[in-house]
Amino acid sequence: MHRPRGALFSGLRPDSAFWRRALTAGVTRGPEPWLRHSPPVFGALFAAALPELRRRVEQNLRRVRGPRSRLVDLLDSAEVFATYGSCITEALLLASDRGYTVVRRSRGFEHYRACAAAGRGIILVTAHTGGWDIAGQILGVVHPAGVMLVMQRERDAEARAIQDAARLRAGVQVVHIGDGPLDALPLLKQLQRGGAVAMQIDRVPPGMRSREVTFLGGPWRAPEGPLALAAMSGAPILPVFTHRLGFLDYEAVVAPPIRLPRRATEEERDAAAAAMTGAMERFIRAHPTQWFHFAGDDPVVPGEAGAG
Image (cartoon, rainbow, N blue to C red; front, top):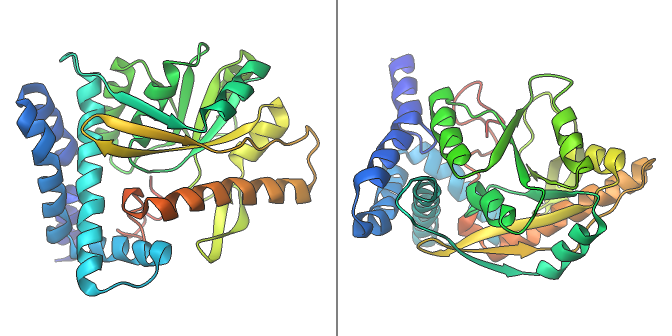
């Protein structure tokens, strides 16, 4: 009984290949009203059909904005799923050949320009928020040396293949990490030629080095990767978080850069980890329903802790 139920649950998850195939079909053939309005509906249906996953989203929401009424929890969790559906759909739509473009807005872009002018490359740290999947496309337009998006391998290999094919069609270079000690080499080369490397800091896969920080009033683990890259390359860490404003309309919020010396002490690394996590916390508190953190304190499915 447990395995079939687990397989069904896994197949219905919003990050499953079934969901991605359905979105791809809709993006290829669907009229614009369908593209605009159906993803939030399907996202809300997922929230209703997957109570355990919805419970974890509500748990994360309470961490971000404190306790609310049961009705508010239900409405906010439905909005998380609805926004997630719209963001994934629009990322696939931008990678299609239908001629759609994204409206790009930004705040704090002067921090990016100052870092880019130094020519040492930039380590962009971000999170799974609205539009994160197209952040490389948004910044790649203005960064002449290109943006390399660093990701952990997704739980569902078929879903990953669908999304990666869309990213490649959109001109976004993706590097999957977590499989070996040489994973950082292409990232260093990208920074050495003045390019940008984008890394997500709201999840730490099992076995990956991390550093303890405070986040949302409690203990959290920040990935060590951005700190190590910054110390090795001399490139600044630039927190950049995106959120969705409407159909194909996104804003990037850029925080001040974080710098580490080549031989950074443990105290300097701790301070840098706290600074990038603090920037993420401020953004997520301002946009709690646009944080797509679908795991709670325990794995969603046995053996999946840290999947992203």
